[in-house]
Image (cartoon, rainbow, N blue to C red; front, side, top):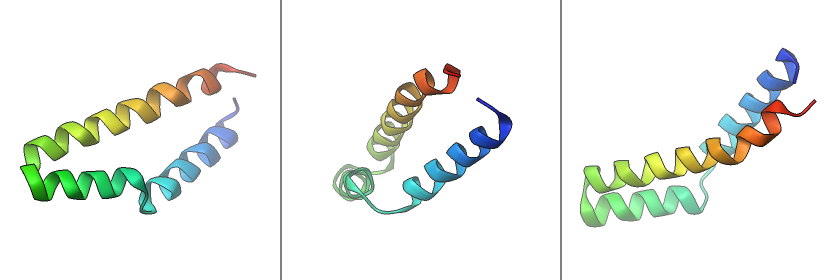
Length: 61
């Protein structure tokens, strides 16, 4: 993966992360129902899932 494709991929992930989706609604619901600590755990899980699903594609040429 070239640096330009990595930058493009990163920008696409940022745009997709900023748009509301199921993860955003789950985070808001968890924060309102259980507080910040539980919502932070959910956010860490979502980020870990996004990163772990993206890793196989970063190494392919």
